[in-house]
Length: 315
Image (cartoon, rainbow, N blue to C red):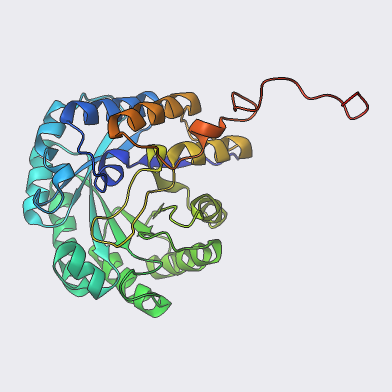
């Protein structure tokens, strides 16, 4: 049976939150609509956080009110506290994403509390969202490494996974927030997550491509049986509270990979690469994804201008 890869498009939220250029609401709507036209079915569109800390997300309520709704398309919003959840529910999100960072130092920088406090907050938010009938994801940030504390031991991750499991979310995500993971890490930590949750909670992986291991880590995730992956058009992204944070793995790069592997994503590569070009113009900078410049294969790469000759033909 062919595996369907479910790519959650996060460019409107995680993709834009670390960009120096602040896109207007109309451009954000266009980005979401382009993602939907490309075939995205789950889109993390914004975060309901303090605009003083993340000014790129200051128009969250306005954006949600203006977004066109489509059958079968789920819009997610990131929340950190009860105020953010109340805003998200009022705005009519289909899903919420709650972050718990695996280390105390990073959790303090990111949301002003310890990891244990963030776990308690997540549990309360999951309960409230469930009562409102909204799908919940809890993402464990820095699951593979921390910019302040370094390696995150498996024992520490087990503790956080256990607390998050007990909160009872509909989905649990591990995030390589600073892009330090390699495939063996993905294999080991997803296995740990399955063990702790007793395979009862669907798993998702949030990848960054800081050290160009994102695509390899995506393959490792599939080999481990996890088929829901976060990605960002163009490879935009990063965390404002992590030094030298860079973008998510590029959606179009993953789609090329899975297309060549014969694994369907439901996403259209040409539509995605056209959106990368559009987004570069809006942001005024070149994005790190590879496909816009390299092209697909066989396809429209810059070197594919004449057919190759046979081995026995003239050079």
